[in-house]
Every structure is written in structure tokens, then in C-alpha cells.
Amino acid sequence: QQQVKQSPQSLIVQKGGISIINCAYENTAFDYFPWYQQFPGKGPALLIAIRPDVSEKKEGRFTISFNKSAKQFSLHIMDSQPGDSATYFCAASGTSGTYKYIFGTGTRLKVLA
Amino acid sequence: KAGVTQTPRYLIKTRGQQVTLSCSPISGHRSVSWYQQTPGQGLQFLFEYFSETQRNKGNFPGRFSGRQFSNSRSEMNVSTLELGDSALYLCASSLDLAGYTFGSGTRLTVV
Image (cartoon, rainbow over all chains, first blue to last red; front, side):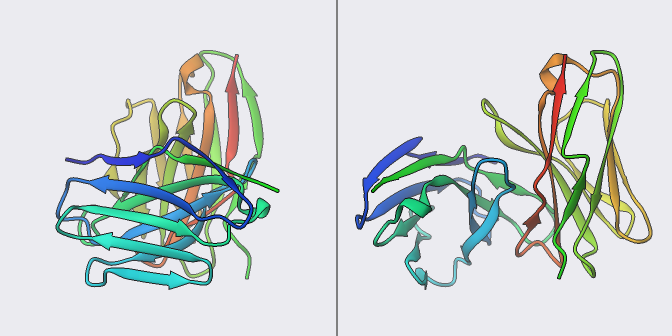
């Protein structure tokens, strides 16, 4: 019940295209769902996050779609750029009592110029 | 505003030795969490500290330990190192759980 399943493992997208990464969770106690972006040699950086009381959140080219009934959420990167090439991690957390994140296994995105 | 600072950045140790890693959180952040990142296992939770108290611990052997000081700085220690402990160790700080800020990590290689 503590797993967060992330897919695909890797993704190649043309410049200007849409990148879509999906995550699924099981624990209904999770109430905070962040996405992190990690470049080689760096720690993960918070990209965007959502709580289950909304179905979508958009920040610039990045959008999270959230389906509470299906226990799924996804990251959409519009107009993907070569600079977006990185590893993306979804995560889930119950912000009261558990004090930890459960991370997905990561998606390595490559955007071709 | 300074970010999360982890030292050292790189470390090479021999099997059986012990190692101590340090983390200085963002000023004002009282929660510090540690994660182990490996290609095979991804990001695995080690432990979380808040105001010098460990609030949660992951599924790692007792060789992995940590502590937090009154200024919120944290250290983690790994004793009797094994080859499988080679990993990137990440520290993250936050005001609450809504929004970790990670450091760049300490790359530990055990030979």
C-alpha cells in the first residue's frame, strides 16, 4: 500500500511536443503529490505539487492532472524543450503523521532538438 | 537565501569503515529528512528529524543512524560499511512536509 508506481521508465520526445508521465498510488491517506526534476549531479528540485481537492494544477508549461477515484496523477510538459531533459520523480505523502515521501521509480526524459 | 548544504560532496570509503555525512538545512527549516538514491532502488527514505527528535524511520538496518542538533543541522552515520551502501545520500529540509528542498547530495563509494 506504500508504493507509488511510475511510468514510463524512459521517454523520448521531439522539441515542441508534449511529455506525459503517469503515476499511480494505493494508499488513500496520501494527500500531497509533488513532482521533482533531477539533473545529473544535482539533487531533485520541486517542480509542481497538487493536493487531492483539485483535479488539475498548471504552472507555466507544467500541468498536473489528478484523478482521485482512480488514484492516479500525471505530469504533462507542454512545448517540451531540450533543457527539460532530466529525470522526473513523482511522490506521495500523507502530511499528517507519516513524515516521509514515497517516491516513484523515476522517468528519464530526453527531448530531441 | 542559502539552500540545503551537504558535505562532503564525494566520499570513498573501504568496507568495514564508518562514515558521517552532514546536512545544513535552509535557515528556519526544522524538519530534515534523509534519502538514499541508487539506480536500482530509486529514492528510499532513511529517517526524518524535527526539533532534534526522530519522527520516522525507514526500513534500513541499524547500521544507519542519524541525529539532529539544536540548530537543525543534521548528521547521518553509517557503520560497518558494505559495498551495497554505495549511493547518493540526499538530505532535504522543509518547514512542513509540503515541499522538500533537497541538497545536492553526498556521493558515497564503498570499495
